[in-house]
Picture 1 (spheres, rainbow, N blue to C red):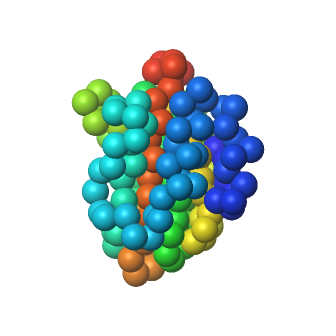
Picture 2: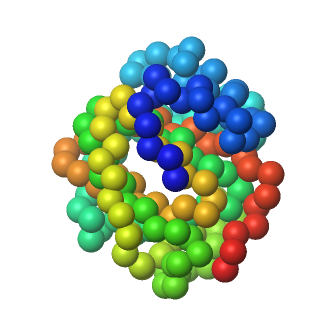
Length: 155
């Protein structure tokens, strides 16, 4: 998991061969004006989802994890208090992994909570379970999904 200001995102380009495409999209797009919904960057390899969602409480935010994509969650308005726990330590799945949606949920509690403020991003790799959309009011953000080379996750 990485937490930083959006103006520093270029320094993380070496994490994945596809990350520079995601970074260029984030750098060259007026994110606040981006229509809600899915936006293609490089087909299914890199795409963005702009959303405005109601915040929820910590207790109402399940941990989720992905196997085929990393998330770059960029908060545009409000603060998203995201929970985090190593996927390898999650012991309480609430359903089977959904390969079509690339998501699995857990009833485990996060081991850390991070305040991801407007202008800040968090990168969650497949080994990172995360509980987003915690806070107050409405959270406006863009989530960029970047395919990873290795879809396997330690169980």
